[in-house]
Image (cartoon, rainbow, N blue to C red):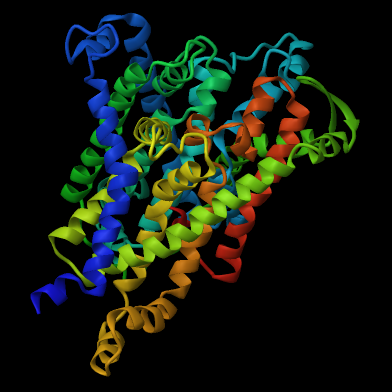
Length: 550
């Protein structure tokens, strides 16, 4: 009986899930940690690589730079995201639904696309820069730290906006009414009553912004110039012209992973200490405000969203302009699209095939893992849940380095193949499907499943015939979210790709680096459409809210 229990359907599935996640996540991370302590490259000891990093300004300065841009962008994202979410959720602002749709579009757009779009607008020969220069007006440079912070803030504030908007829906109106009846002003009520209740949402938004900024590779490469951050250094050391230095790249990857994991644990600790567990019987309602106050709030939100949307609008418009390398001319043409027709075939096929395959794997494995976490609680399922949480903290470039280090040699030589990219996409985006299934399962009763088992159906048949249909909406939701986030992956792709596995994101990146802004804009428009179309299904056909994204 004990052996049958041990070899049953769900114990076998649990063991399989542990093997898969360990092979694709834990083992690569373990290997890069081990390699970082290796003394194979001019090493006098196991800590040689770390001593070199912290003793040479060229190296440790990148860590300082990463903290500068990430913390600055996080603070600014909070300063604009929290009030924007509050005004949109509480004030009668015109076109509130349109604002939310625009925020979603900003959220899902690839950040590196916005980076080169800002170069078109605010670069040394940018449209806005040259126009204002004719009137003697000069703008701060878009290159370097200030440009990276600017782009990070505009691209990642939706994390804060969406989470705070969701958090406001969980606060009961009676809490605010009680404070106002006691004579508290609106600002004091927000500061002393509402903001503390939003602490978990705000801290989670700050964490997501910080990790996204700290691990972003495309934007610093495009805008950084001599301002180097840690992900750029990892990429440079791994693919340099002298064959790469995997030991040093592993050391840098371990430092990056240590920081992101520490940030995740710190946020979880803070959120648990500041969670009040409120339930909204009557959620916060829209407030009637004086016209002037409502107008100022609307102007703030419109300006923020409008500026953040400007790069996307610029990309679409630029794709129809005649291009001479990095110079775009005010002449309508379809040449950019004609030029990509001959080259987009393989990248587009690779992108759709890799993304679809990884998404389907996420749907299958994520649903089963979600079932194990909710329906079979225990130490093993808790450990599996921890692994899934940990996968969020592993940056794409770190995962890429780890997979190359682990699966570069026989008998598992997969570097540069389609399989390694699909597996990287799968393990990176698996949390979307898991969390979607977990959320739905926590709301479903076990009665139907137990009745099926009592009538003689086995666990596998019950799962396929009863549980999966009940989870169909959650599974589809996870699929759409996974697709939209996977199709724009760049950092892991840069490490793992080869000439045969180039994707649309990588093609855009290469065209930007080569200064072909017209072609890059046409490719960027295609990628934006491929990213946003599944989300339009998620929100319109399925009636999901924007906070499903985070």
